[in-house]
Image (cartoon, rainbow, N blue to C red; front, side, top):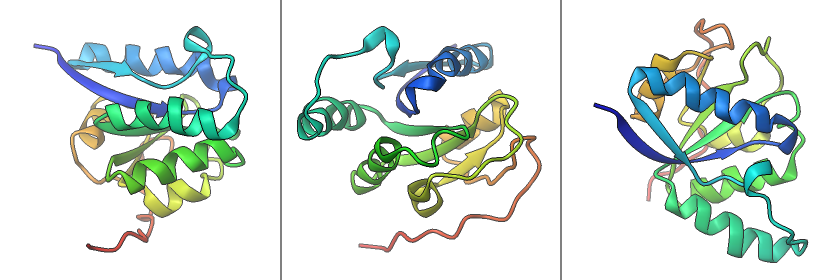
Length: 155
């Protein structure tokens, strides 16, 4: 039986091609991803930053049960990606970093280093485990890396 999960996939638009690849990777492993992120097929014409954050991105992140950051060399310097991660953390979302397919290890967005619950390579089972709550820290090839120290504090 296929498990359906509502997620928000934070990414830069240059990486739109990877979103469907990620969904296709998980489907044979029994997980259907319903993605609320903004991408080329679901683009909007808004230009006001406050409006985009409060009326488009925030509701999409709130809807999602899990927040995924698609990690590529371009995500590190994206103010939008960092804002989305910080917002998701404030909402108490599980935050999972997924290395782009074929990535050799690039710098992570600062907010991901601070708030991630897991960081996994391009492996369907590892991604599903991370979405479902396993705190894993992997290099892009799936090998173990040192855990990222979390800055979260208990309530």
